[in-house]
Amino acid sequence: MNDSGTELSVPAVAAKTEKPDPTRSPLIATIAWFRDLMLSVLIALLVILFLYRPVKVEGTSMMPSLFDQERLFINQFSYKFGLGHIQRGDTVVFWFPEDTTKSYIKRVIGLPGDTIAVQDGYVIVNSKKLTENYVPSDYRDDRPYPPTVVPPGEYFVLGDHRVSSNDSRAWGFVPKSYIYGKAVFVFWPPDRIGSVH
Image 1 (tube, rainbow, N blue to C red):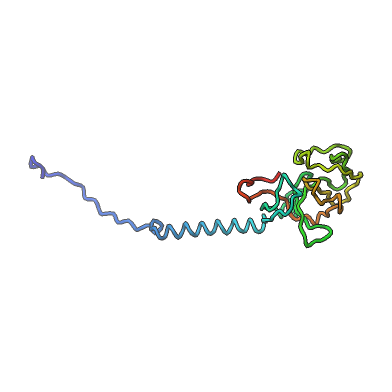
Image 2 (tube, one colour; image 1 turned 180 degrees about the vertical axis):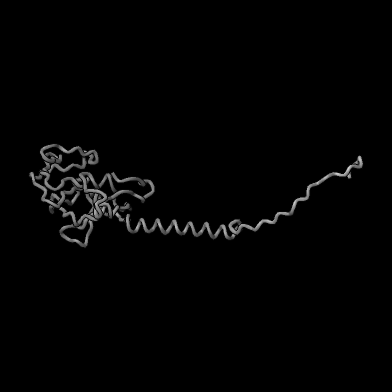
């Protein structure tokens, strides 16, 4: 009753009983989060191991684009499965034609059927001077290379540091079947992280 003697009417409400939500348990939530994290890590590892592959640069022949001891990822499936074609300017990793136990990394300059020459430190492709912003003037090599036609199914490759690079000028062309990856991303050292150009 209230102060005036009038009885208050209070509707009867049945007590609600909620089932406990198991996902709200801190332990269950932590386990679910850890499971999702592990699944994400596993997927990332599979992508890295089977699509991208880590490699280490050894030597100075690709300076200033790539430096000695840098670590980078190469895409090892784009060329094999027709997801991309080898193009002029690609930085590729391949089995060294004179010793297939060794891998080299160089830049593709000549495609099958191209006529390649080097005059006064400049590369001439099909009678036109190639624009190479990635080769500083003091890295150019003045040694001439006579006009040569790239055979079908093979590629002419050069290092960006032309003075110190052991490349197609010395040992010839690279068969397409020897090229197993395209350099895509530097991940070490931290101050060099970024795409390969």
